[in-house]
Every structure is written in structure tokens, then in C-alpha cells.
Image (cartoon, rainbow, N blue to C red; front, side, top):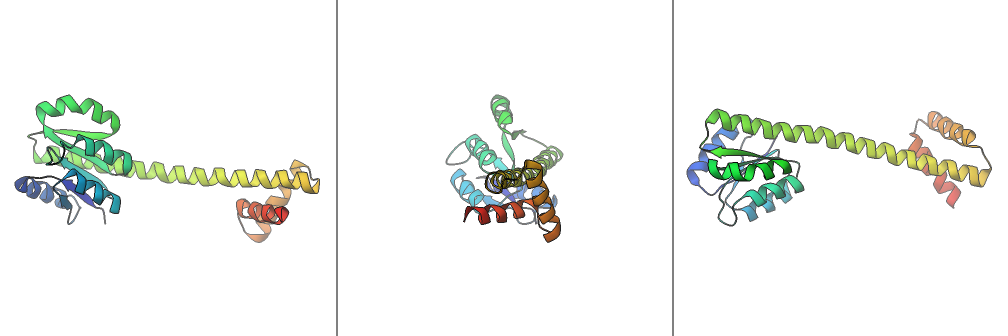
Length: 189
């Protein structure tokens, strides 16, 4: 179930924002009244979207927006008075924070929330691909290390070492990384 965090100090605004966010598929959004509380909550759970209604009692809110983008995967939407939004949006948008000027319509708010959610989903795909590539790179390093040890300690050629690792991986139905790890442990004992 996707989670939404709303950082807002106004009761009327909280009701409005929570109603729209709930209608968009974020049941029971977490509502906090300060930047400090929002930071604490962001450290506890993974939120898909963060809506910051400025100003907050302990800070304006743009600091929280930049922090949330840096420390979480959430799509971050900052709501500020139109004049202020025009001033702060260039810098915040470079950091990945969406800025929406107040007053705004329900349609504009919903579109902004959808964009923030899209940012979260796109980042999730990129991070999953990054993790897959990091794992692949780690396995290649293990295989190369095992090949070096086979060449160094067993006098094999690079082609023979490669063939041995491939054959053992097929025979044991293990990954080349797992075979390489076993060979490294065996040869380092």
C-alpha cells in the first residue's frame, strides 16, 4: 500500500490535502505539523510522496523538501504562496522538488501529486536496475579474482580458468559468482 506524508500546520489545509491524497489512492496519509516530525517519520518508513505545505512552524519547508529528496526515494511536492514559489522553485527543481504555487485548484494539486508519484516510481526502477548492475559487477569481480588465482596457483591459462568456472556453474546449477566464491575460498585456505 503506497504511503503519503503531509507536512502541514493548518487544520483546514490538512483536511483538504488529506482528502485529495486519499482519493488518489493513498489511504490514511500521515500528517505531521513540523519539519522535525516529518524528518523523523521519513526515517521510519518509505513514503511514495511527501507534500509540504509551507510555512511550517519550525522552518519554512524548502529545507525539508531538499532533505527529503536527498534522504529518501519519495516524490516531493512543496506548496508555497505564488510569489515565494517563483523565487524558490528554480533551485528546488534542480534538486528534484516539485513546487506548486498557492492558491491552486484541485486539478492542479492532483496533477502535481501524480508527477511526484511518477518520480518515485521512475526512481524505484532506476535503483532496481542499479542494484542489478552492481550485483553483476560484483560477480564479474569475483570471477576475475577466481581466474587470477587459478592462473597463479594452478598454472591454468585464462581460457582454461574461464572454461572451468563456466562448466562448474552449469554442472552445479549455480551462478558463476557462487562458483567463483567457492574456488576463491578453496584456494585461499
